[in-house]
Image 1 (cartoon, rainbow, N blue to C red):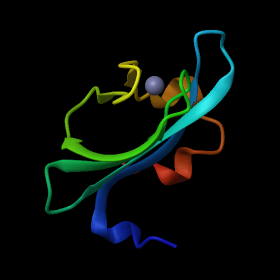
Image 2 (cartoon, rainbow, N blue to C red; image 1 turned 120 degrees about the vertical axis):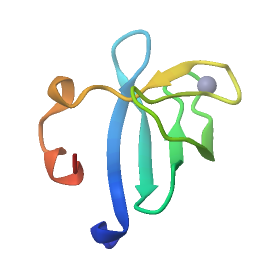
Image 3 (tube, rainbow, N blue to C red; image 1 turned 60 degrees about the vertical axis):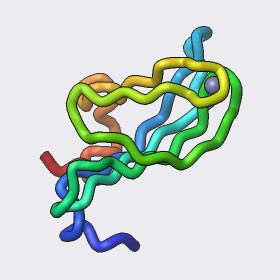
Image 4 (spheres, rainbow, N blue to C red; image 1 turned 90 degrees about the horizontal axis):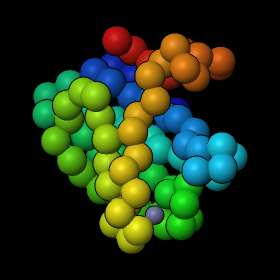
Length: 89
Ligand SMILES: [Zn+2]
């Protein structure tokens, strides 16, 4: 279990492909003392799995390094089911 106190933002979201199926995911974590987001994603279009670091800003988005798909972090209200606990705002 990750120590939430270390992070000012941490989330784990599912991503849909163009057909509306959930085939990917993105996890973002930003440390308290950092302006850089640690990102792990599975691209919903090409299944590319990648770890990357990127400047943290909102709205946050990341490009798949393989197919170039722009993956946006869905807004919380669009995907508010059981993931609210993982989000600290
Ligand atoms: Zn891709």
